[in-house]
Length: 163
Image (cartoon, rainbow, N blue to C red; front, side, top):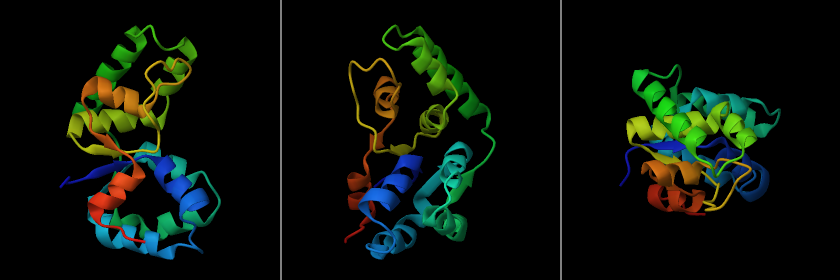
């Protein structure tokens, strides 16, 4: 069993807006806090993405934030991991320059850096795409650097959410 999970913002946003709305599937959100709160890690850059919205997700997050481990300013090991990842992405001829720039300034790059530095699993809804050129995706970076990643359904199985 994994110790901690670094959660991508798209997991919360898609769960709320498309898969498990608060009014239709409140048990998802209740179990998420009950079964995984001490194992969910939110980095500052992801928190900013979550807080951009003006909906029930933001209200829920603010109410439950204390149940999650929120990481603020990255430490030296995370900064070093970020540098290694960005250097590799910039040297990779597969991606368009615009994709490289976008990734370097995104929360996704920091999420991957935390995953690499801390050895924790990333939970994301992004899918691996071998030949993608227009976007650097989390699963592609994870595969390149040996960072574990899983999707929402696997996360739910591992922590025991049953709907």
